[in-house]
Image 1 (cartoon, one colour):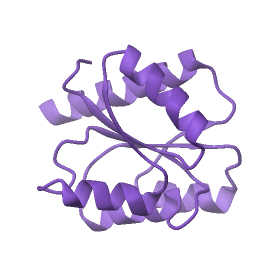
Image 2 (cartoon, helix red, strand yellow):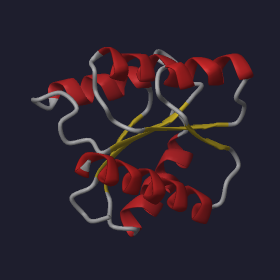
Image 3 (tube, one colour):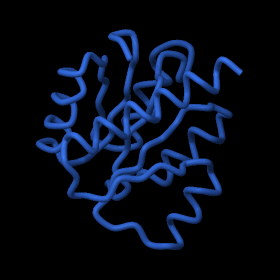
Length: 134
């Protein structure tokens, strides 16, 4: 992808968020970041046309104020067709089913390597591009 591809990265661990953002930027992506789902929602809604410039959301599952599941619900409630990559240290079967019901079907379990992470991001963006051409 190119530098016009914008990713919203949401994670409450500032060091982890910084490391992922650094990897993404080094790969040429524009990155916005937020410490939780509530801040992410506010950032996007304050930016004019809601969600318009976001190509991919990457979110942790467990966060204070508004977790990744609630963020996914918000995205779908607004009828946004943005792919969501959920990253988590633990994914229960019940939460996974709920996320899948919402159309959030891509997951990475922590820990993962930078290569695994970037490969997953690229694959999701390629699928989105292919879907938009159809």
